[in-house]
Image (cartoon, rainbow, N blue to C red; front, top):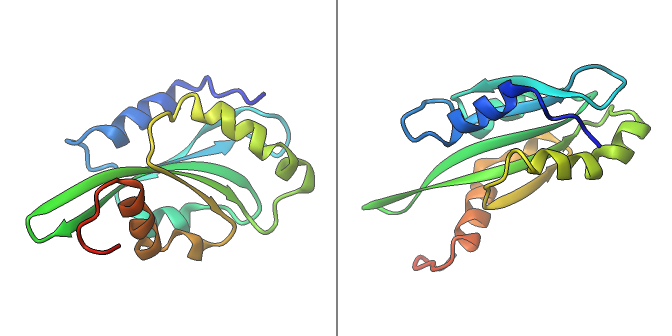
Length: 144
């Protein structure tokens, strides 16, 4: 099991979910190369693009992001995405534990519309993620 008791994780989660906050993503990272303690790695307000740049190619990490998009000129939606990142240089034993640890992280980052398994930064391109969010959102009147 992963240790997700760092209070900064829960605080950052609440900040990302807060409509009045500019913070729209947070990153949860392992405290060290060994061990299963997770801490808040970073947060920001630059959306999926900034989040993608924050990932470490040598690590497994978890992220939570608020995505705003429009269905038509008169309405916008706000949905949340849970991301599991496994960088190309992640050690084999860390990769083996990620799926179990993701379950522990989801106990804290509970509410999201879709989950993205990212192995490269291109997996976080906004266009395809918005398409997935629209499909997950139920009624779609624009043919998506």
